[in-house]
Length: 105
Image 1 (cartoon, one colour):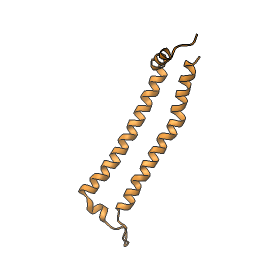
Image 2: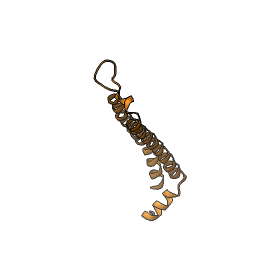
Image 3: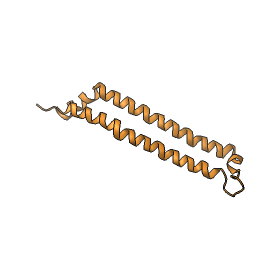
Image 4: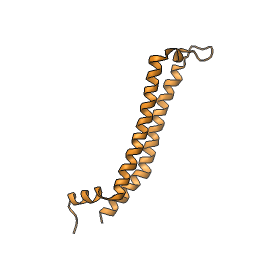
């Protein structure tokens, strides 16, 4: 006899593997969020309180430090997004598939 949808949801929510998945995924997401917030807030504080640092020219050219710092922030954002997607597509998706497979029996 197949379980109803509500029974299935209740069984999955009470599964220790599911609780581990949620806890691990949440901790990972909050860690990356904290890193991103730190990076952006640091950049904003630098712009607000140390403009002269970003206004320094690089070498004898006209480019200032604000350009590589801004590009670095964008690259950092892309990298941590890729890091999250890679882990989500491998580890988290595998854990989810295993949990669903166990409960569809």
